Image (cartoon, rainbow, N blue to C red; front, side, top):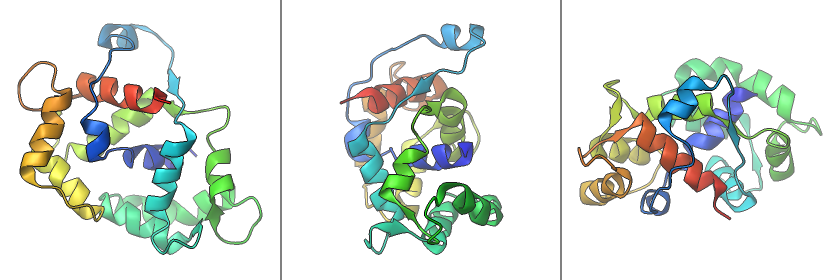
Length: 184
């Protein structure tokens, strides 16, 4: 089910989220030195936005084919074979779909783990250079069916780029994502 949290988390990126001013909840050093994997609880409005992104035909439920389309858009084709297992674990009423109640149930008592945030970072870091560029953000958003100009994507990067290098590194991404998931 960690894969579901990862997928849910990847969709939290949007223009609105990038434009928020990040806050530091804990330092990179704290994360590296603690043996704990902190979790961050997404709020219900964020979860609804994510659910709606999966539910492309807007029928109030996610089908396996809708789920596979999103995986493909994110370049996660290797996960497609796991979709039936994911659905088996989440689909409590066994109707073959994931409804919003089932979608939210998987997050109770849990949340988004630090390693899920790191996995999301790696998905955005398409060239695997340890940083996310405006061009990479634009490409991921395009794959998800969102339109965003390169200048808008550059503005998103500037909103979270605390070291001023024009890129988003892991620490900046972690700070931005933990701030986003804890907003009310």
